[in-house]
Image 1: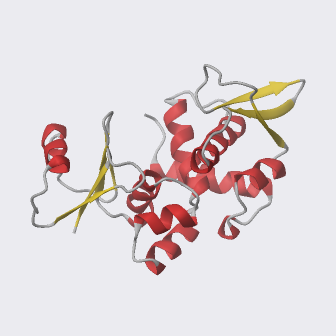
Image 2 (image 1 turned 45 degrees about the vertical axis):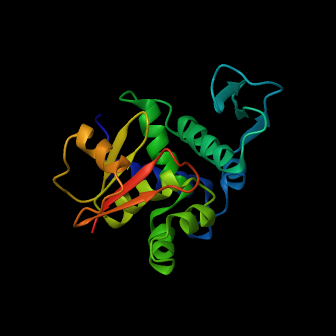
Length: 202
């Protein structure tokens, strides 16, 4: 991975600047796409691309979304594809870059920091405020506030925040499954996806 956390935040700011929109106003992904002259369409049937795909036909940018996406997945898909349109030549882990910048576009740094303090870092409230998933809100806590944290899912374990001596993945997965309290560590099962657990250093 050649891009950094600072690159992600810079790219998100650039997208709002190009759109001439204030990220603090939380304009929403449809309005952001419209300001960038990117059309949004729903595919007539589910394709092989997952939740969304960017398309350019005769110089016109568009995003085609899988049909009947829940609102939070729709917002994330639009954010991800906006990043693909705006940064098309990302060579190193382009999907990871688009996911990371998409999250920063959905939950802009300044607005997210203010909201996190206001709701005492409550993941469900943050997810609702930014129309995203609790997973995204959890990772943004680490990215924006520096909270040392780990999000454990079936597929992967993602760490965010300030430097912290986390145990190996196998032990983190065991801690995520365990109901016992660990000094200096809090454990939250996400309410919108019970298979995911958020661990954070106290």
